[in-house]
Length: 358
Image (cartoon, rainbow, N blue to C red; front, side, top):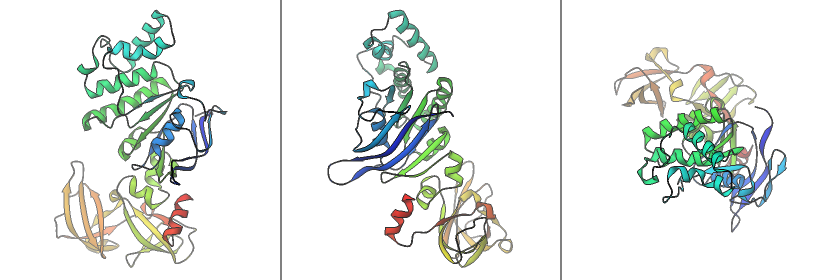
């Protein structure tokens, strides 16, 4: 990916009182990457975005752009543009003038402005819409105008603060793919904020999972989904079965009074752990073929698969499968060793916070 374009070094942001919205966060973003900050409401992701954009100043720490400290620079002196959830288009200007607004402020020649505006209209697939008024456009089209207005200034970095939040489901899916395509075409760095796990997995090169002002895990979508660092990440990224377990020894874990072979090692012997198993990794077989037996207690058809709950050894297992199983039927549960994820279990609530920090 090349050199880092943005580096956050021990960034904190405290508001009145002692609550830290962002707590000692360090993060490096490479030039041209599509990075998503993902987490629940209030986790600090939008605060980080606003600090990168210059709309908030960090309480401590540094923000480096290409190695230069920009922590105190105002937004208009940063080569960064932002697309907000509320598109903030000028209702009294047509589409052309909305997009050209920043270029006119720079007093660029009219023919240069014209060329740039027509180019970005082509990128966002709105050629021929120059004279249309904002209120005549759909939500998806307004979204595209907001993006066009941001990229026409040729920023090095584009910040996107939940920009698809106001769109309906179908339009949101279309815009996810269009944004991904635009990113590939433009080659600029995208930093995207969302609380939607599926959106993050669909669009990103790198996902930064946050909770309580701290980074829980940074990785590719595959790494975040397949190798979550802790129970919070596992639970937040997709659905999971998270079960109390004891690591008997390397490659053997006990859950629900039953021993399962696994591939993890280095946890020691008889160590309490959290065991994470994805619903699609639970295999339902004939009762005598499973590691443990259970009873189907509910089934919902989801289109691509069935979502089944199986009560086995006192735990309600969530299972995704393409095979139908009747409620009340007896089944065996099998999980291959590779699909069992083992995590250190904090010994107390105080240590839980410490463990998440690690």
